Image 1 (cartoon, helix red, strand yellow):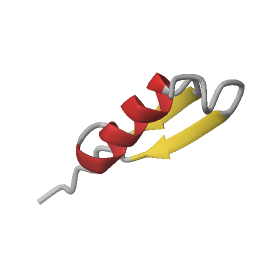
Image 2 (spheres, one colour):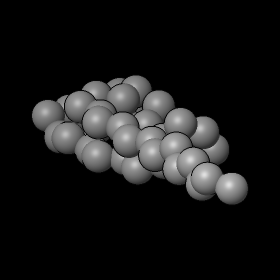
Image 3 (cartoon, helix red, strand yellow):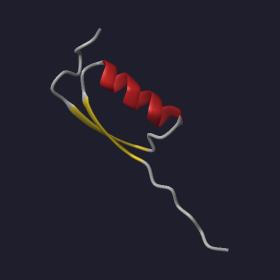
Length: 45
């Protein structure tokens, strides 16, 4: 099924691990342009 998302763009948040990462990999394998985002929040004690 490669090419199903050819020419489409996806923005995926939380894409550094888990479901977000799996989605980014799957969308890319289907031909999509993928932009990923990950936010590492640090809270000062």
